[in-house]
Length: 171
Image 1: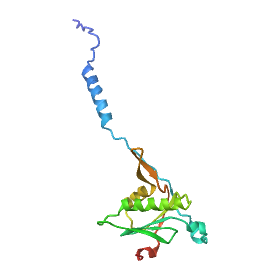
Image 2: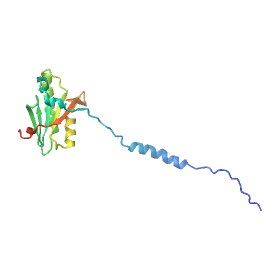
Image 3: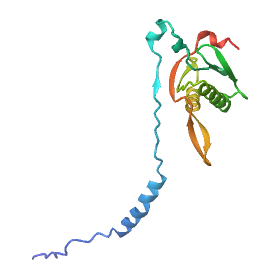
Image 4: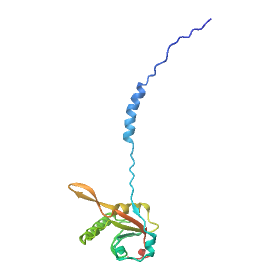
């Protein structure tokens, strides 16, 4: 007795419904994807040899922004308070800080000084988000040019440092 097996051939795969699913699913997933945008800030750290060297008049013409617990202090030249921006309702007033820096930029330009650098001096317990917000405020401001809003440059060359120990007691 022989059992005969039929050679029925290979079965066809029905993938039409799977292909329809992929045609719909892939564009939907791509549209809902969040593309991350990474911004890099170029910072300059203070030179270690600058502390021991004697200050020349050109080095003293630095624009400083001191971040304290209750206010911002804008110094120009270095160490000489020019303007103080107190906190408003318990929060730092970045809008007023931007206006002060725009005015400083205008005054320096009127004197023929093209300044692009600023020192941000902060206390060791300054919040990270505060530093990032200060750096964003210092770099540029929103300006209207020909009926469109653009980022105008303020002081894009940012250096970081420690606030002086006696800055906390000064009014």
